[in-house]
Length: 235
Image 1: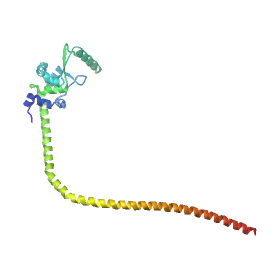
Image 2 (image 1 turned 180 degrees about the vertical axis):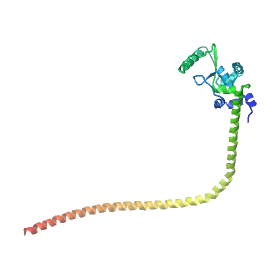
Image 3 (image 1 turned 90 degrees about the horizontal axis):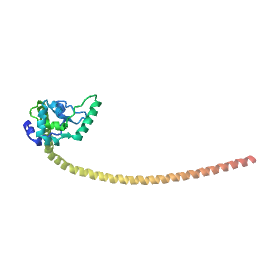
Image 4 (image 1 turned 120 degrees about the horizontal axis):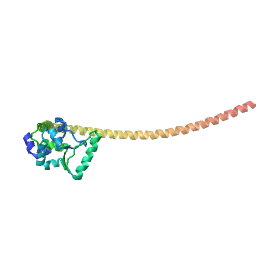
């Protein structure tokens, strides 16, 4: 696990930690500007409880790295536009005045502030942030080691699984043959059922025809019976 000194000295190690901006608020609440994205140099100094000059000196020494992690320097029209936006946001929050930089303004994002925490030596808050980062790194490594051990145990069981599968192979083969035989029997049965269905359909049609013929004959017989009765009455 990397040490605090290694984190202070190694830019590569700091890059690995850049996604852990949540650590900042776990150590101390970081008050952002009304846009919710940036803080100024004095805000960074207030967070780390150091002088503004200390933050400026550190920023000057590591400006390239900090710029890669969100540091911006506003001047001219861009600065005036930003001030206008901030005044509008502060007014919405009921703040009467907004301090404006004269010629330039350095803006830090949470990512930039985290980078400062890994560079700033003379700050108890920065040390706490680094401790949180290293503890989290250690926890992740412990979880990885546990997972690695579990995977190793699973791998050690694989030969037994292979043997069991080999023994199961013939059984599965026999079951497959029986199922094939059953499929053939089912197919024959389905053919018989189909033939019976056709035969029953034919019988049903025959019954319908016979029923119609029977009804016709009964009707003719009824007419004949009526005629006989009429003739008998005349006599």
